[in-house]
Length: 198
Ligand code: OGA
Ligand code: MN
Image 1 (tube, protein in one colour):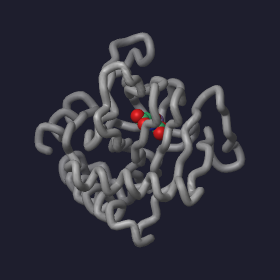
Image 2 (cartoon, protein in one colour):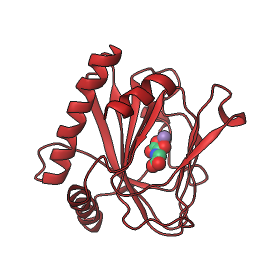
Image 3 (cartoon, helix red, strand yellow):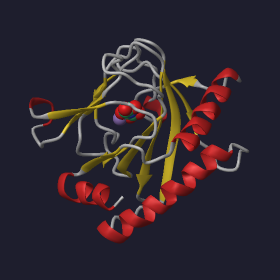
Image 4 (cartoon, protein in one colour):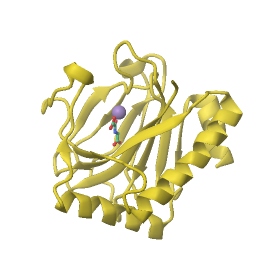
């Protein structure tokens, strides 16, 4: 965790494989699959408020927003872990993060999310993005990598490809880093969310 915070400090982003153990990750994945089978996922939109629209040319995932205390023990314990991370980020970087909002995301085979920033136009409430991947036995060639451009040049500059392996946590500054989800050859699951300021 210390190395992870150091990376965020130095580079504005960090990746921590094995952040969530296999047992907890599988429980989260089970809750994701169960909710999906209950029909609780909706096609994800682009934009916010009155400008929110489904744009299949931009993103093709389905999402379900997390609610604490809904009887999903894995979700509640992940939210508790994020609370520890929120306090650590505040203590170290004085970010004044006060809450987390997030959703399960399912990318069906072939789905993608084109290059974007996580901060909506005219807003500044989303400060840090946190993504946990829930894909067991992910192999090179399965696709679905997170492509994260790591320099101020954005999409003209250097990038890293992060495999969406079960238990890997990725964080980056939501307003600064262009990123994209590459198409995967099988279903891809994750929990994506944002630490927010008021
Ligand atoms: C998002 C997003 C990346 C990922 O939901 O905004 O960029 O790797 N997700 O799932
Ligand atoms: Mn994003």
